[in-house]
Length: 345
Image (cartoon, rainbow, N blue to C red; front, top):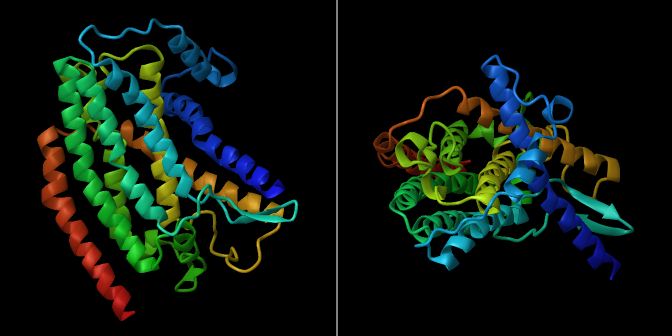
């Protein structure tokens, strides 16, 4: 009974990570963009503007919740919930640390350490496309529908690249488990470099980065929310907390993709000198592993923000051409090359 309770509390703690990082990321987005553009950013609500996300949440909570007259109410209401659910449930298969011993019970720092962990992520990724399609169709207006169609075309295109990049890592590691892929990156490469897939498979990592930026609908791939062209994209007709759920889903998607990149390419919670396997580490080393994982995720999130305020937006035709004519063929060749090298070596 105690072990079940401990597992339940551990699951709750891990589930809070994306929810806690989202408001921090909203604040960081404004502060970093202000720093890049030589302006102040939020600095009035709380120290350094830290309470600005709270003020935004309160504002959205008390805004009038309007449902369009022509909306398909069921799809309209469910769409933002499905969007957020699709992003949060991915965290079930992302290991944030090694095992930990609590009250004599050994527990993995992961919600579900299943044998098909990475496939679970690939299976859930298209659910976000379903949510955006529900929002566009359910709004009963042509503008959200156009935004949803563009979002679906973009996300499906780059999910192919994302899947091929993930498969290349899986083939090299010989495991579908997130923890197994992390353990495969332990130690040193050539005696002086971290044995991370980022250095062993740089092309795969580059393909994954491009695809995850497009998957998160971030600049230079934020065509689903191109305001000058589409009035606001698939969520044009949303207001109040329904809009807030879409807003949270976008930032939670960034956090989840950065967590996945850390697991696949940056050694997860490990550093080159971290011992893996064997008995579960003591409490302090286990918590240090979680801190290492979160530090890598935060560094990647900073890169997301930096890209947004550095690169211009692509045309939609260029966006699809880049995926289908360049990235997908390149990802296929890369996958075959990694498979052949894994067989030889």
